[in-house]
Amino acid sequence: MKVAMCDPSLFTGRYDDSLCAALARAGAEVTLLARPMRATDAIEPQGYAYRPRFFRRSEALRERIGEGRVFRFAKAAEYGLSCAMGDLDALAACDVAHMQWLPLAPVDRLMLRRLRGRTKLVHTVHNADAYHADSGVQGQGYRALLDMFDALVVHGETTRAALERQGLDPARIHVTPHPPMRLAPAGPADLALIADPALPRLLFFGTIRPYKGVDLLVEACLSLWRAGHRFELVLAGKPFMDIGPLLASVHEAGFGDRLIADLGFLTEQRLDAHMAKADIIAFPYRHIDSSGAFLSALHHGKAMVTSDAGMFASLPGDVAVRASAGNAPALAQALLPLVEGAAIRQALGARARAYGEAMGNWKDMALATIGIYRSVLSAGARATRK
Image (cartoon, rainbow, N blue to C red; front, top):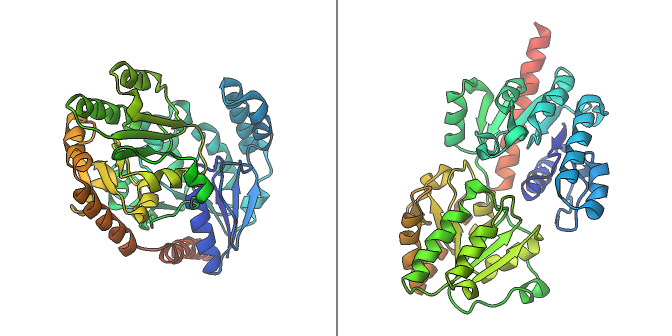
């Protein structure tokens, strides 16, 4: 079975790599089609092929012009031309074209129209609300795209139910639980670049976007610091919002020495080093379906604090401390016993690690995914015979 895995912007590279490698081990012939890899990417294809099919020209400009408005316009223009007029043989020649992320819905429609009837189309809906309602033009028309696929893959019942409420045919929706992931491990040099904590350390890592509630986390930390509680806060990742006012609020309150901001596209090894040196990891998301960041942190065995949005609401009660989504005072209350109690942190961390070890694995997910591919292929064969 030939599979074209497609994530044009390489939005979830670790997920793509894990799934493609597992599919290859299960016997599929897989090619991952994405953008050219960057220095911060840690993908080393095992058993599958990697093809930089998208954004080749705009990525070549990135080092020279930065990531401002001109770069974003160049990316959008290049992608639009690719979807409307580009060579799609690499996708159409496969039995299945599996789209992970659709980066620009208005032009993704053009590509999907050109592919329909030439190959079977499968899409993983990582979140039922495209880009967490923070997409602007990027997600306009995303819901209509879902009707163009032969099968939709989701990672939990929350997403399935949301899609059914949107009018999607339940028969086309398949649930495959998201296994835990591991980032490229930090080496001694990576660990040496991250200062050892002077106080209990609270970490937020990954891309910084409005839906992830970093502002709520900062507000909660400020309230605890003002009440006399001593701990550090680390923000590690690339901001996709203006966080200047958040950082300024910490410094203006006199707690700048407790804030570590490591901002930008960070390597997986650097993110892994941050997790290794943290005592608590926070996921204060306003809304989410499933969180790859959470699933990539479990094996570190650190105490977790989350909101009660999406997948977090269904976690066993002893795996993480939960707070009401969007509620900074509740988040502060959830954090309080963790910043004050080493024994509580240790116990929660051990349960988080055990939970990750008990979850499914990529082999199971690959076999389930191949089963979905076979179902759409056999349905197509039956339709042809009729």
